[in-house]
Image (cartoon, rainbow, N blue to C red; front, side, top):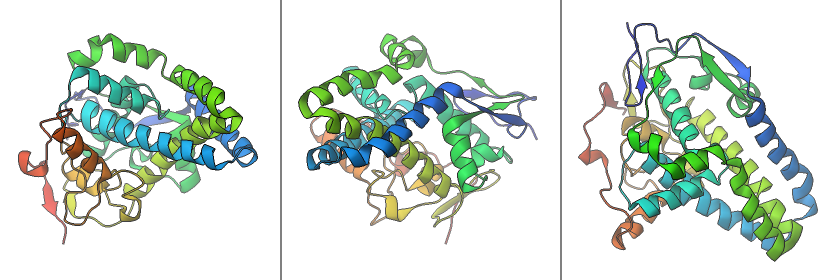
Length: 299
Protein backbone atom coordinates (compact mmCIF):
# COMPACT_ATOMS: atom_id res chain seq x y z
CA UNK A 1 0.00 0.00 0.00
CA UNK A 2 1.50 3.42 -0.94
CA UNK A 3 2.34 5.86 1.83
CA UNK A 4 -0.20 8.59 2.53
CA UNK A 5 0.69 12.25 2.15
CA UNK A 6 -0.12 14.91 4.74
CA UNK A 7 -0.60 18.66 4.41
CA UNK A 8 3.14 19.45 4.21
CA UNK A 9 4.68 16.02 3.68
CA UNK A 10 4.23 14.92 0.07
CA UNK A 11 4.82 11.19 -0.38
CA UNK A 12 5.18 9.20 -3.59
CA UNK A 13 5.28 5.50 -4.39
CA UNK A 14 8.88 5.23 -3.18
CA UNK A 15 8.37 6.98 0.16
CA UNK A 16 8.90 4.69 3.14
CA UNK A 17 8.43 5.40 6.85
CA UNK A 18 10.29 2.30 8.09
CA UNK A 19 13.59 2.14 6.21
CA UNK A 20 16.12 4.53 7.69
CA UNK A 21 19.22 4.97 9.80
CA UNK A 22 19.58 6.81 13.11
CA UNK A 23 22.65 9.09 13.11
CA UNK A 24 24.20 11.31 15.73
CA UNK A 25 23.27 14.99 15.25
CA UNK A 26 26.35 16.86 16.56
CA UNK A 27 24.95 20.41 16.84
CA UNK A 28 21.70 19.30 18.46
CA UNK A 29 23.47 16.87 20.77
CA UNK A 30 26.11 19.35 21.93
CA UNK A 31 23.41 21.98 22.50
CA UNK A 32 21.11 19.95 24.73
CA UNK A 33 24.00 17.98 26.22
CA UNK A 34 25.77 21.19 27.17
CA UNK A 35 22.63 22.73 28.67
CA UNK A 36 21.93 19.56 30.65
CA UNK A 37 25.49 19.31 31.95
CA UNK A 38 25.45 22.96 33.04
CA UNK A 39 22.11 22.43 34.76
CA UNK A 40 23.28 19.34 36.65
CA UNK A 41 26.58 20.88 37.77
CA UNK A 42 25.57 24.47 38.47
CA UNK A 43 21.93 24.34 39.63
CA UNK A 44 22.75 22.97 43.13
CA UNK A 45 25.48 25.58 43.57
CA UNK A 46 23.32 28.56 42.65
CA UNK A 47 19.87 27.70 43.96
CA UNK A 48 18.05 30.66 45.53
CA UNK A 49 14.33 31.42 45.98
CA UNK A 50 14.55 34.17 43.36
CA UNK A 51 16.28 31.89 40.86
CA UNK A 52 13.59 29.22 41.26
CA UNK A 53 10.89 31.84 40.69
CA UNK A 54 12.69 32.97 37.52
CA UNK A 55 12.82 29.35 36.35
CA UNK A 56 9.11 28.75 37.04
CA UNK A 57 7.88 32.00 35.46
CA UNK A 58 10.12 31.80 32.38
CA UNK A 59 9.25 28.12 31.86
CA UNK A 60 5.53 28.82 32.09
CA UNK A 61 5.72 31.71 29.61
CA UNK A 62 7.86 29.91 27.05
CA UNK A 63 6.16 26.51 27.31
CA UNK A 64 2.55 27.70 27.48
CA UNK A 65 2.41 30.86 25.37
CA UNK A 66 5.40 29.88 23.24
CA UNK A 67 5.58 26.15 22.61
CA UNK A 68 2.03 24.94 23.23
CA UNK A 69 0.10 27.91 21.83
CA UNK A 70 2.55 29.67 19.51
CA UNK A 71 4.40 26.81 17.86
CA UNK A 72 2.12 23.80 18.26
CA UNK A 73 -1.48 24.98 18.15
CA UNK A 74 -0.91 28.06 15.97
CA UNK A 75 2.13 27.75 13.67
CA UNK A 76 1.96 23.99 13.10
CA UNK A 77 -1.76 23.21 13.22
CA UNK A 78 -3.33 26.63 12.50
CA UNK A 79 -6.07 25.78 14.98
CA UNK A 80 -6.49 29.48 15.79
CA UNK A 81 -5.72 32.86 14.26
CA UNK A 82 -3.89 35.90 15.62
CA UNK A 83 -2.58 39.24 14.35
CA UNK A 84 0.82 38.82 12.70
CA UNK A 85 2.68 40.77 15.39
CA UNK A 86 1.19 38.63 18.16
CA UNK A 87 1.80 35.39 16.25
CA UNK A 88 5.45 36.36 15.86
CA UNK A 89 5.68 37.12 19.59
CA UNK A 90 4.24 33.72 20.48
CA UNK A 91 6.55 31.93 18.04
CA UNK A 92 9.53 33.85 19.45
CA UNK A 93 8.61 32.66 22.96
CA UNK A 94 8.35 29.12 21.62
CA UNK A 95 11.81 29.36 20.09
CA UNK A 96 13.18 30.37 23.50
CA UNK A 97 12.21 26.91 24.79
CA UNK A 98 15.39 25.75 23.06
CA UNK A 99 14.23 22.72 21.04
CA UNK A 100 14.76 24.05 17.51
CA UNK A 101 13.93 26.98 15.27
CA UNK A 102 10.30 27.48 14.19
CA UNK A 103 10.74 25.90 10.74
CA UNK A 104 12.75 23.08 12.25
CA UNK A 105 9.95 22.45 14.74
CA UNK A 106 7.38 22.32 11.94
CA UNK A 107 9.49 19.88 9.94
CA UNK A 108 10.25 17.63 12.93
CA UNK A 109 6.61 17.58 13.99
CA UNK A 110 5.22 16.95 10.52
CA UNK A 111 7.73 14.23 9.69
CA UNK A 112 6.88 12.37 12.89
CA UNK A 113 3.16 12.93 12.35
CA UNK A 114 3.39 11.67 8.76
CA UNK A 115 5.28 8.55 9.83
CA UNK A 116 2.89 7.74 12.65
CA UNK A 117 -0.07 7.95 10.25
CA UNK A 118 1.32 5.17 8.07
CA UNK A 119 0.57 1.51 8.74
CA UNK A 120 4.16 1.02 9.91
CA UNK A 121 6.98 3.39 10.85
CA UNK A 122 10.52 3.41 12.24
CA UNK A 123 11.03 2.78 15.96
CA UNK A 124 12.33 6.34 16.45
CA UNK A 125 9.09 7.91 15.26
CA UNK A 126 7.08 5.42 17.32
CA UNK A 127 9.15 5.84 20.54
CA UNK A 128 9.44 2.04 20.64
CA UNK A 129 13.06 1.97 21.81
CA UNK A 130 13.93 1.40 25.46
CA UNK A 131 13.86 4.37 27.84
CA UNK A 132 17.50 5.47 27.64
CA UNK A 133 17.90 4.56 23.99
CA UNK A 134 14.84 6.59 23.07
CA UNK A 135 16.16 9.54 25.09
CA UNK A 136 19.44 9.36 23.15
CA UNK A 137 17.70 9.02 19.81
CA UNK A 138 15.16 11.78 20.32
CA UNK A 139 17.43 14.43 21.86
CA UNK A 140 20.83 13.68 20.33
CA UNK A 141 20.19 12.03 16.97
CA UNK A 142 18.28 12.30 13.71
CA UNK A 143 16.60 9.71 11.53
CA UNK A 144 17.62 9.68 7.88
CA UNK A 145 14.93 7.80 5.98
CA UNK A 146 16.06 6.14 2.76
CA UNK A 147 13.07 7.55 0.86
CA UNK A 148 11.45 10.33 2.88
CA UNK A 149 8.47 12.38 1.74
CA UNK A 150 9.09 15.86 0.37
CA UNK A 151 8.60 18.69 2.86
CA UNK A 152 6.53 21.45 1.28
CA UNK A 153 5.75 24.22 3.79
CA UNK A 154 3.18 26.87 3.00
CA UNK A 155 4.28 30.13 1.43
CA UNK A 156 3.91 32.10 4.66
CA UNK A 157 6.42 29.76 6.31
CA UNK A 158 8.89 30.01 3.44
CA UNK A 159 8.79 33.78 2.95
CA UNK A 160 8.42 35.34 6.41
CA UNK A 161 11.78 37.07 7.12
CA UNK A 162 11.20 36.98 10.87
CA UNK A 163 10.77 33.19 10.84
CA UNK A 164 13.87 32.85 8.67
CA UNK A 165 15.87 34.97 11.15
CA UNK A 166 14.63 32.93 14.12
CA UNK A 167 15.43 29.70 12.30
CA UNK A 168 18.99 30.78 11.56
CA UNK A 169 19.77 32.11 15.03
CA UNK A 170 17.48 30.07 17.28
CA UNK A 171 20.23 29.07 19.72
CA UNK A 172 21.49 32.66 19.95
CA UNK A 173 18.08 33.85 21.18
CA UNK A 174 19.16 32.81 24.69
CA UNK A 175 22.04 35.31 24.74
CA UNK A 176 20.14 38.59 25.34
CA UNK A 177 18.13 36.98 28.13
CA UNK A 178 21.25 35.46 29.65
CA UNK A 179 22.81 38.95 29.80
CA UNK A 180 19.69 40.47 31.36
CA UNK A 181 19.36 37.70 33.93
CA UNK A 182 23.02 38.00 34.89
CA UNK A 183 22.69 41.79 35.16
CA UNK A 184 19.59 41.77 37.37
CA UNK A 185 20.00 38.58 39.39
CA UNK A 186 23.58 37.40 39.11
CA UNK A 187 24.78 33.87 38.29
CA UNK A 188 21.85 32.20 40.05
CA UNK A 189 19.25 33.83 37.80
CA UNK A 190 21.37 33.08 34.74
CA UNK A 191 21.81 29.39 35.61
CA UNK A 192 18.15 28.77 36.45
CA UNK A 193 16.78 31.04 33.75
CA UNK A 194 18.68 29.54 30.80
CA UNK A 195 20.41 26.13 31.10
CA UNK A 196 18.11 24.70 33.79
CA UNK A 197 15.00 25.92 31.98
CA UNK A 198 16.16 24.66 28.58
CA UNK A 199 17.32 21.28 29.91
CA UNK A 200 14.11 20.66 31.88
CA UNK A 201 11.87 21.83 29.03
CA UNK A 202 13.53 19.73 26.31
CA UNK A 203 13.88 16.64 28.51
CA UNK A 204 10.31 16.99 29.75
CA UNK A 205 9.04 17.31 26.19
CA UNK A 206 10.78 14.08 25.23
CA UNK A 207 9.58 12.26 28.37
CA UNK A 208 5.92 13.13 27.80
CA UNK A 209 6.22 12.07 24.16
CA UNK A 210 7.91 8.80 25.15
CA UNK A 211 5.09 7.90 27.53
CA UNK A 212 2.09 9.12 25.52
CA UNK A 213 3.10 7.22 22.38
CA UNK A 214 3.49 3.93 24.25
CA UNK A 215 0.84 3.50 26.95
CA UNK A 216 -1.87 5.17 28.98
CA UNK A 217 -5.61 5.83 28.88
CA UNK A 218 -7.29 6.44 25.54
CA UNK A 219 -10.56 8.08 24.63
CA UNK A 220 -9.98 7.60 20.91
CA UNK A 221 -8.09 5.41 18.49
CA UNK A 222 -7.33 5.74 14.79
CA UNK A 223 -7.48 2.60 12.68
CA UNK A 224 -4.67 1.57 10.31
CA UNK A 225 -2.02 3.82 11.84
CA UNK A 226 1.40 2.81 13.16
CA UNK A 227 1.17 4.75 16.41
CA UNK A 228 -1.69 5.59 18.73
CA UNK A 229 -1.79 8.57 21.08
CA UNK A 230 -2.39 8.12 24.81
CA UNK A 231 -3.20 10.54 27.60
CA UNK A 232 -1.09 11.32 30.66
CA UNK A 233 -3.55 12.96 33.08
CA UNK A 234 -1.02 13.47 35.87
CA UNK A 235 0.98 15.82 33.63
CA UNK A 236 -1.94 17.84 32.22
CA UNK A 237 -1.26 20.97 34.28
CA UNK A 238 2.54 21.09 33.97
CA UNK A 239 2.35 20.51 30.20
CA UNK A 240 -0.40 23.13 29.79
CA UNK A 241 -2.73 20.53 28.25
CA UNK A 242 -0.23 18.86 25.92
CA UNK A 243 -0.43 15.62 27.91
CA UNK A 244 -3.89 14.93 26.42
CA UNK A 245 -2.06 13.39 23.50
CA UNK A 246 -4.70 10.81 22.70
CA UNK A 247 -7.14 13.66 22.12
CA UNK A 248 -4.58 15.41 19.95
CA UNK A 249 -4.10 12.35 17.74
CA UNK A 250 -7.87 12.22 17.35
CA UNK A 251 -8.39 15.94 16.69
CA UNK A 252 -5.03 17.44 15.59
CA UNK A 253 -6.69 20.62 14.31
CA UNK A 254 -8.33 21.44 17.65
CA UNK A 255 -6.98 24.33 19.70
CA UNK A 256 -8.55 22.67 22.72
CA UNK A 257 -6.62 19.59 23.86
CA UNK A 258 -8.56 18.76 27.01
CA UNK A 259 -11.77 18.06 25.11
CA UNK A 260 -13.51 15.81 27.67
CA UNK A 261 -15.28 17.07 30.82
CA UNK A 262 -12.83 17.50 33.67
CA UNK A 263 -9.69 17.45 31.49
CA UNK A 264 -7.54 20.38 32.61
CA UNK A 265 -6.09 22.33 29.69
CA UNK A 266 -4.34 25.50 30.89
CA UNK A 267 -3.33 26.35 27.33
CA UNK A 268 -7.00 26.47 26.37
CA UNK A 269 -7.80 28.60 29.42
CA UNK A 270 -5.15 31.10 28.30
CA UNK A 271 -6.53 31.07 24.76
CA UNK A 272 -10.07 31.84 25.92
CA UNK A 273 -8.74 34.80 27.93
CA UNK A 274 -6.75 36.04 24.94
CA UNK A 275 -9.86 35.68 22.78
CA UNK A 276 -11.87 37.87 25.16
CA UNK A 277 -9.41 40.73 24.67
CA UNK A 278 -9.20 40.21 20.91
CA UNK A 279 -5.66 38.86 20.59
CA UNK A 280 -6.73 35.49 19.12
CA UNK A 281 -9.81 34.33 17.26
CA UNK A 282 -11.24 31.42 15.23
CA UNK A 283 -10.45 28.91 17.96
CA UNK A 284 -11.12 25.44 16.55
CA UNK A 285 -12.70 22.67 18.61
CA UNK A 286 -13.61 19.08 17.66
CA UNK A 287 -17.17 20.10 16.78
CA UNK A 288 -15.75 22.44 14.11
CA UNK A 289 -13.64 19.75 12.46
CA UNK A 290 -14.12 16.83 10.08
CA UNK A 291 -13.19 13.60 11.92
CA UNK A 292 -10.03 11.82 10.80
CA UNK A 293 -10.44 8.72 8.68
CA UNK A 294 -10.53 5.66 10.93
CA UNK A 295 -11.28 7.62 14.11
CA UNK A 296 -13.34 5.74 16.65
CA UNK A 297 -14.26 5.98 20.30
CA UNK A 298 -12.53 3.74 22.85
CA UNK A 299 -14.77 2.61 25.67
